[in-house]
Length: 340
Length: 195
Image (tube, each protein chain N blue to C red):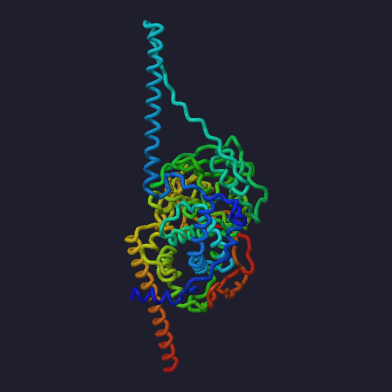
């Protein structure tokens, strides 16, 4: 029956065969004056060679530093020996971090990539992933510089150690950004494997709320990072706004716990096997007593939500590329109620 | 880069351009079909353009077998597109879905024109659907499909086997339910006749 199922699926193919090409100009217009990026050695490039090279690089650098320090010490000793044989010296070597290299000036079209090397404060001030809602405050969130802090780090297998940076906003929203092991900010290299939302300062559902949104206690961003073996991790990071403090955040679909839960913030890395597109996720937060304090999609008790009190309009919507239709349901009238 | 003035284009870019155009000619149709099978026509051509813009930027990373690589990018573009929809829109959909769920009629009342097979397919997880469709609709062999998903061919075979089994199970249970409904209906008719 197995091949039979595949054969039957083949017969249901909405676009059998190969379609005609799009005009090449449609793509060239988007490319503009962009050029191909040279293949840089990257820890997550997927090929063994560059990864090994990048692993060897710190070793070579450390050896070079050791050799340099020894050479300096020898020179200083010989200098003191030659000038004052009886003087004893204590040399203290301090590790001097390399000067940061200024990021190259990028064209306006590539402004998003410019954010990759921002400091946390610069990133939140730029707010590349600013979310403007139609139901809530229209003004963008403004970061409070003194609140920018590294919440903590967590390890994603095959990727490395991620830093989670957060901040508060003047409008009572939150800012969040994940820094990758190579110091890039997650969300910018949108090359198929690596993407998701830009880091952002964004309004919470409580801010937007007022019956327009479900205030389920979860406010988070999403990002996708590739692991060493070319597969993807889907990382959700944000905050739980329940009255009790969460100590555990669980995805009930994959049964995975958040890697980091601190000060009501969380970051959870989900493996793509169970969460290929990130749609099959259901978060729950628990307090220290093990009580569930937030359930994704369900309003927190006492928060405003909506209820359909009118009839439903049901209509057939054509499925593009096929002769079939699907049903679409829309409530005619909602009322605001307080969740129990 | 000046495509309209090749005499001024640096030779490196000329090589890249020729390579890109060859890549485009070879695979645009397949990528377009892939996109149109998964998203509405209006959005699909945008996805295709995005895929080739990314492919242009990553031209140096293109492997020997380019189609799975392009389809892998297309999957990423589709996933990002889905995720980058505004939170407002997503939540509104969720509200509508949550509130509508309670008032939906029984499945047998729905006549949306889909075949039982497609309904069964949609009931599977997205990963299962993708595994089946890469083979059945996109006509990829297992090695190519595995490459699209970024997994080994062996693992892909396992997933394909499991996805087929799950689809068969759903189809069987749908068929059994239909038979039970038919039997119930005929039993009701008998009781009416007997009265």
